Structure formats: C-alpha cells, structure tokens
Image 1 (cartoon, rainbow, N blue to C red):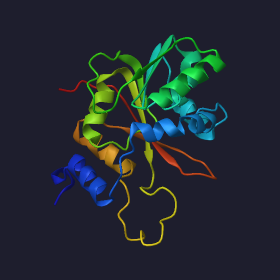
Image 2 (image 1 turned 60 degrees about the vertical axis):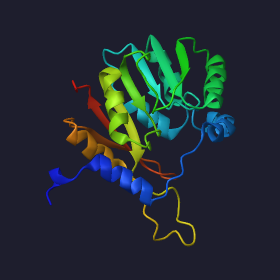
Image 3 (image 1 turned 135 degrees about the vertical axis):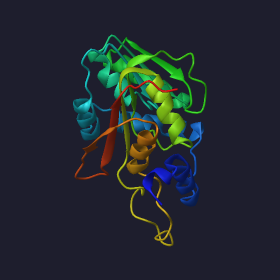
Image 4 (image 1 turned 120 degrees about the vertical axis):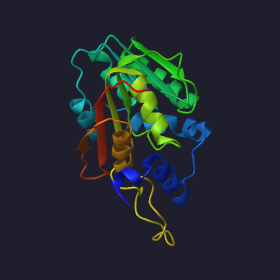
Amino acid sequence: MLIDDIDFAALYQQQLRLAKRTEKSPEYWDGRAQEMSAICASPQSPYLQQLLAKIDFTGASTLLDVGCGPGTVCLNAASRLEQVYGIDYSSGMLEAAAQKAKVMGVNNVTLLQRAWEECWDELPVCDIAVASRSTLVGDLRDAMFKLNQQARLRIYTTHTVTGRFGDPQPGEEEKPELPNYIYAVNVLYQMGIQARVDFIRHPAARDWALVSWDRVSLT
C-alpha cells in the first residue's frame, strides 16, 4: 500500500473510535469555564505567548478564534487587530470570555455560540482563523475545510504531539492513543494543502504542534 492509498480522514475517525474518545458536552465545559479563564487565558501563559509569537499578523485586521473557550487567543490578540471574533459551543465559556474582555478593556470582540458541526454560513470571513487546542473533532477534514473557508489570509491550528493526555491509568497501557498532529498534516495534504509544522514547547507541560497554512481555493 502506498501513502496516497490511505484515507487519512477515515483513519482519523477509526482511531477516535478505537481510543474510545468521550465527547465532552457543552455543560461539562460550562463547569470548567472560570477555572480555564484563570489559567488558559492569562497573558503570562507560556503556551499563549509562543502561539501569538508564531502567528503572522501582517496585513490582517480581523481574526476568528474557533473553540475560543474563555477567549484565550482572541482577547489576547485583540490589541493587534481591528476586530476579533470568538466562537464556542459552551455558553459558560463565552460568558467567561465576556467577563475577561471587560477586565482587559477589550471592546473589539464579538462572541458567538457555535459548534464545529453547525452551519458557519453566517460567520464572518476573517483575515486569520485560529483553532487553538480545539481540533479533536469528529470530522477532521470538514473542520480543516471550514477553517480554510473562513480565512482570507492564514490559518493556524494546534494539535497534540502525542495522543495521550497524561500517563495511562492502570489497564489503559494497551489502549490506542487519540489521533495526533500527523493526521492533520496528512488530511490537509490530501486536500491539496501543503501545511507548515512548528512546535510549542513547555518544559513542565505537554508540547503542542502548530499546523498552519495560507488560505487556498477549495471546492
């Protein structure tokens, strides 16, 4: 079998099933919103600092933050842009983001409740689209397609380097890992997109892969 014979989008979904991934409900994230607002949306976050440093804002005036959580990316990028948008399927996360925006004095942000699987036709097309730590979705190809279509210039996504969150629990040693960033790179390749890969390193926490590309015309 050659690499082009492999359907990486289907293989990604197969690995999700084998890893027995449990999809978290909006209510689960509602309950974690305040905790994540204090930790993840902090400008001092090493992850966030590295991510923002790697985003090319040249020629951009708008940004869409997909799976924005408590506004981690959109609020901290707002000072560099005319308008930023954040979408999430958790109303609690959006409320935390709105509270954070007031504290930070950010008044150029629009927050909308929307899931990956919903129709995005009414969302604004922005210069930059970002999906930060929100890409473990049911249909990776569809997600990458949507991100590409929502951006005029560039797209940035982050994915786990390894498919395991923390050390395996007893009895889980043989359990397949969740899909990692390699799937995103290969799904994009099979869509006709040549992505760039970089890494966000953290000595005391997990590393993340940054997969980015310039917007291309897709049908």
